Length: 287
Image: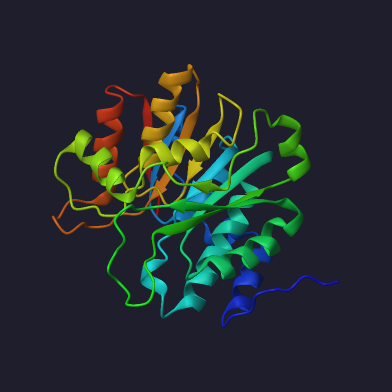
């Protein structure tokens, strides 16, 4: 039986673009050879679709694990635009994954059903690993007279489930995460490193580390192309200290002014330097 597919206005255009060589179509500007990545850790400043193309065209190490928290909140009334954007990015993200890699995607209940169908189409429903329910707050928000939304989801897909299972070690992971860091912990994690800030969407470090642990490799390459305040970088660096790992990160984040006037990429880089002063980090701006 044919699997159900998701249709939206603009999908055909997105599909045609995805079926061509996205990286050749976009032509991301190439830096001088002397500025190409030399360090294990990489921070790209610019559009994430262009950034993914940059990684591909420069033969950057492929990811063992991808974590993303796409900004879905602003798209409640323009779901078609969000779906077209995420379709292209997930299509290219799959190319950037090693055969045994996983991708973890945070999503709310508004877009969970659409994203699940989209991932079935891009990664294949046979490569579905889990739909995790994460309790994100212990203080129910007063945003509705009907329900109190205290959870979100994490969709987990493999590029090739058989290859992932071949390297998987350890006990099964429960699909209900009730104490892996609440949202306010994410803001506190950031403030401890950089002081007062106005970024309101930081995920807790403990939560990102649990996602990273889906990959048993201690030398994993971790990719986050919606990097935000660089929680993923902190999670990688501190997890390495805990278990002696040599994981590396690839982050992509566009410039974005915060309410206090600071650029989000500047805040993210301040965070990384605070976690690991003197870290060898390639920072490149792509256009």
